[in-house]
Image (tube, rainbow, N blue to C red; front, side, top):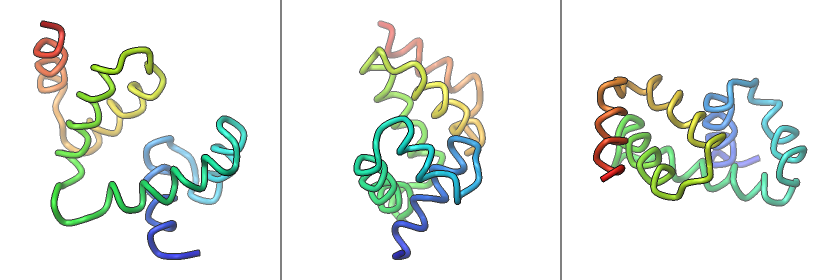
Length: 101
């Protein structure tokens, strides 16, 4: 397993609230093994570089999911993750208000 994939496992374990060694099975059960491998690998690069911090990434993802609509389960997880990354409830409320208009 490469380092990027390991970082992806850790990112999803943190987001979903499960052990790192359970992430592959979690994805396989919900979305299939192939999608899971791709998502884990993508997360290993998207959530871990030096350009944006986890807080800023969380803000961007929450805003994008709000605009997509119909992704409540994913949004709930990312809102929780945003809070864990230092985004305040007031900031989340401001994002929702901004995007609602």
